[in-house]
Image (cartoon, rainbow, N blue to C red; front, side):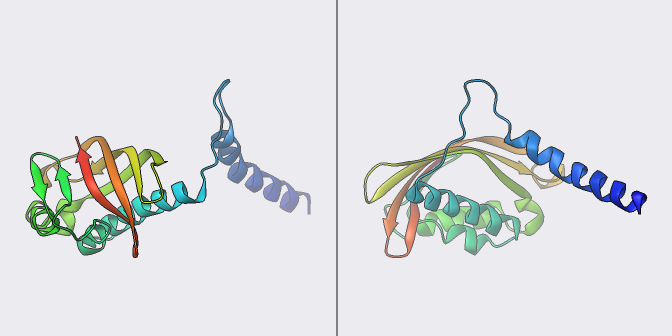
Length: 157
């Protein structure tokens, strides 16, 4: 019986120790609670990350506004949804080339009832023969539409 109790206590300690460590804050650092609108912007970005990692390029692109006014700046400038879509499909023709995308340091900011911006970092892991790893920063402007928040300007470096 003691062995079972010790095993359970050990298992709980192993599982909860990393959780406690990740919740700790350094002096002066505060945990931030986001307003719902900012959380909604973060959800868009996480949806985009999930779609990418599932190999769903159309799902990833669906979070951009289907508009001729869309602008994506990254190794050149793409104007309009059709141009952006063609560029992505040319540069990422298959799942292996897409690799694994991770967003971090996401900072959403609501500008007004219709517009928001977000900044963050990205990391793309993929085989060397498929383009190799890449990482950088991005800034986005999003517009609140009838379908929810959509990206209207993407500047990725």
